[in-house]
Length: 373
Image (cartoon, rainbow, N blue to C red; front, side):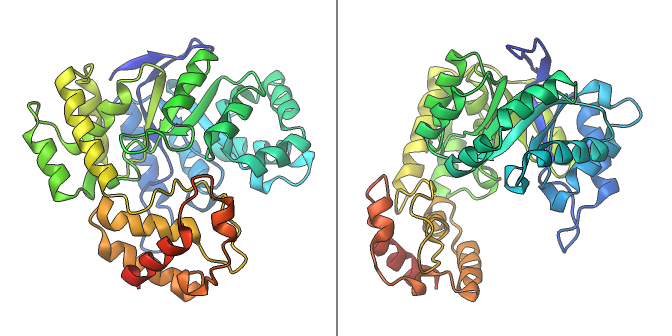
């Protein structure tokens, strides 16, 4: 397993990290605790030393599973990360209450990294008013957390603001061969490096879609490459090629996935010029399949009529990006059942006036509805 040195903390971590958001569950989505414990321990035994969980994962049971898994000496073998759910915080006292609850679930007296979870502009402003940074200082001082960071879901200007607001140790961003300029993107990764802040990457396979929802023409490019690699390996190699990235999180939910990924990370080497040419061809093909260039920034929300604008446009894109007409229609049917589909749109134009990319949203929603419904 390849390892990388964390800049500010002098800790060494496995490049592959275990994300505990997609662990084994039953048909109703309930976490299978014993199966999850076995899976986490299998990952650690295989060489993974970075474990990532959060307060809300698996209906608030992920931390319980991680805490169980890290007994019997496993805690000392890993860097443990969990996250502060800012949406649960209403008063300053909630910071301590939630962290103490998390430590109880995790069966530990401290976490190595504590990330302010899923930050976007409004949530950042809310937490700022509640003195979240003072809380982080206090929790570090009393030993409940060793290092502080944040995970991010907004646009680059917001990322810059948050990055410069505190002496962060780490940031967690979405990055993959399709989402190069999405949210913080490659520019955010560069800025983090300049600030001495380590980068943890989430969604390197875009929720698995870069692994198992691959259009035929893109699969043909992968198969014709001089180096024979699976689409999963190509996707991981793309992210791993950035030295600023210290951990690549993967939401593995079977032992077979863990074993496959361990083998990939054991044989990683820098990308060659030929490799980069293959990846560029794939990226160009993916971009050509995008119906409407929505990045999911959600500046168009809230829609006064309740239309799920970014979700609808994402489903529309997924038809051609991932050959997923059936899945997209099924998901759209759920929006129709809730009354948040395009049929609720009255073409008021408020969304278009807010869109930073000046997209023809009304036209795009209508085109999406015509196909998805």
